[in-house]
Length: 493
Length: 105
Figure (spheres, rainbow over the protein chains, first blue to last red):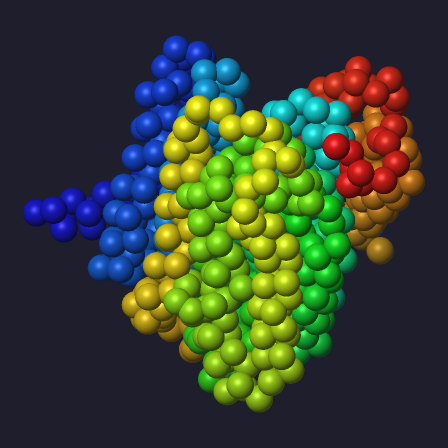
């Protein structure tokens, strides 16, 4: 009975419409019902995402035509293992952010809620879109929403960072759209699966592939197109930074992966994939070195995101070889999930630190661990996953990627993977070692009686989630192998 | 050279001109306009593709895409103008400050 309900309901549509309806309600109710909406957004999306995951696990990839119109003019939703896991990632991180933001913003800034819920709906819509143009529209929705969220703190630096981000993200989307136009001209379809059968290695298709990769890499902040990220991610309020670094960069990366798996499977080149891999490796080293150099904690965490994005791009060369494709894909999915939880946890913890200390200069945070034991512990636990130490999601993900690198004889990527972990330890301990010193009270403002549990607990929950992921590696691999749109991934590549 | 190819190439040129403008023009309004020129270039490519089938038969899908794209462009422009106004109110300037905000408190 319950299984029939889970199998027959179109959970992909429910996953998109739940945050969307809550966003509209939040906008209509303004200041009055914000707490109800906030709690609804903590509880409902994870339920829908879990149901979607179970549905995909039981009956495989699900396609749903909204309103029964069907392609090419209607909007289709396609949920497979990859999309279901990404929706679940949004649900877990989003739920913790909704919990955190209640304490962080309080009754002021009630306009955070409609924008944030709209961003959430856009994220789920990207992960479930079945055709290239809907991806474009939802990417733009995501851009506009995240720009408003960055500008929320209304400081001059936030406004400038928001404008820069808006212009870059819009440009990236146009590159993508020009690619979509060229592809449609050549192949006559926008559906990703159909494209996979119709692409050839003609000039327009190659140009389209290059334009789309360029635009999406700009939005994902792959080095050397990362220059906008640190300012934007560090100028935003803490819950927004968590969403930006944890979820939003993953959205454009997801589109890259989806394109590569479904549409450009047959026309991608060895050279192109290795260029992306090399840029990823440069990102890991460059981002980490910058994170060691900066003086402010939020910038440190933002540069850490630049570095961690590099790992995602190692997927392109690793997944090329048929023998390691499913290993590499499971690894990168696990990496994305673990990074989303860990990075969001770190940003939420840093938000609590800034609340107490009033600033985020790393040199002035000695002894903050005594004031915020739970938040500092959350930072440390998330750092374990970011560095890739066992037992954590980051460790399991890097382990899978290392295995893929070694089985395909591409040992040089293995060096980068290990080196990145060491560098991550280097910059994360810059904060942790100071935070755990004895409280001399000289650097920090006097303690007030207020409890910061509302800020510390969500950070802690996400950090625990990042570590628990380390134990879910095997079921996750099986799920990825069995539930992709194109039979097994190993066959597809 | 057929007509639709000419239009598509013109669209590509508009795209590149807009992109150049976006990079070299420091004035915020000019940046926003340059972005719109880029978008118009893409729309021109799409419309040219729609007419490709020959006389009389038009492909409706690119037209639907252009209409949706225009809505997106209008919303993007609105948000960009509002942000530019705020930046101007705050700094008294019509350009972005130098540097990337790293040194800002």
